Amino acid sequence: MRLYALAFGAHPDDVEMSCGGTLSMLHRHGKSFGIVDFTRGEMGTRGNATIRAKEAKEAARILGADVRVNLGISDSDIERSRKNLLKVVEVIRKYQPEIVFAPYREERHPDHVHTHQLVSNAMFYSGLRKLKTGTLAAYRPRRAFYYMQHRTFIPTVYVDISNDFETKVDAIKAHKSQFFNPASKDPETVLSTPEFMDYLLGRMRYFGRMAGVRYAEPFWTLEAVTITDFDSVI
Ligand SMILES: [Zn+2]
Image (cartoon, rainbow, N blue to C red):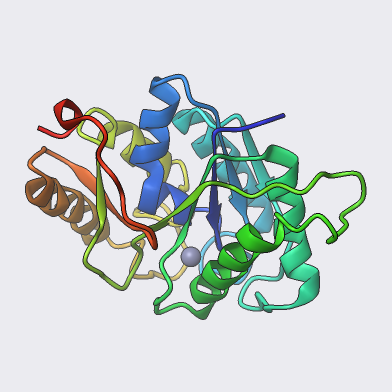
């Protein structure tokens, strides 16, 4: 199955928080996409691997994902090994995405940094014909868009998610074990406080303001983004 986009995240709710609105927009525009989680998030303070897998499935359904894949790498132990690199190469070759979403290079959580590095490297190596991965043919995606998590950066691209922020919030809330839930007996984390959703909404609103729209998601691209049609940006 060929997909238009693949969104990689270290943990099962990373993609929803960082580029969920953009993925929802792609889906509304008839573009296919998949979510690839590196780990099952089993080291998270709240929930466990089984609960999180169910929540991830529901969140993917809400966003309109065509597939959600888990690479089964150990949470808090995303090694930049050849073995893990080849797992990412294989998934890129299998789905042949035009575009890839991944964490930005600087992050608080080392798992996010390692995910950035593995995805960036795999985007190149997956195009090498002599690097064999079974019957999967060599393939190189056209462009990576790096999303914002804890650390901020000056974006090179903003995506207008004004029509998608509600879907994004619903997808985030599908991760019931991770976010605010007065009935939960798990220890509180930064994510599970009621203020966390305010912060996420505030950030989408802030970047919306910068982009001249209501809500936006920020991205960083290594290559320049070129305009071919001014009507699309004015
Ligand atoms: Zn994460």
